[in-house]
Image (cartoon, rainbow, N blue to C red; front, side, top):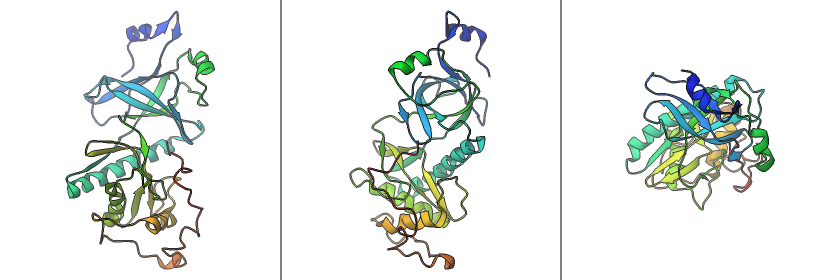
Length: 275
């Protein structure tokens, strides 16, 4: 579904493109298809993404709601990197459903990113850049991700290695990470970030470490799993749940030295967002 020619005219000022605008996102059904128009500069630039606030257009219940548009800072990265992110998010969402059914009184939810093609880039960005400097340079036809905007105070609750921020990391989040291993015996979901609204944590862009290395470049496999459990302290929710047995070929890892055998674990203040 392309933008109508009449709407396109409204988006132009004296022939100049006014807005950043996407084509329709990927969707599982025709009653839930969105485009997005978004701001001319990012509200956040991390190691991987520039993040823009936008608005859902198109067809579906989210029309008119705020969304987030993520653009890769490294434009040379292939489509596979976006596919990995959507795959990781879907896997995390699956385990959050299982966890919510178990806990019942508290809830965890992950955003579900969708891919879309950037159709138009505003001609006013060079002017905006003079006032709001940013590194990312949007390109027409690049693939971006759209996902729900998380309302509230955005926080990083744990690092990809599982190190928790004791000031704001609820035991429910630590238990969820442990739960992902207890149920799967294959993965640990960490790097939890987002916002808490009432009884629900709304999270985005987690990290998954796995026994198979199937979850992208941040998947550190067994070292990542063991590093999580080296710092994890069970609480009343996850006490008694399974912990991994150190595989035969990794016997030199132990609960006290596995972090030393891998890259140094940063302090929480040094740990960067995976946005």
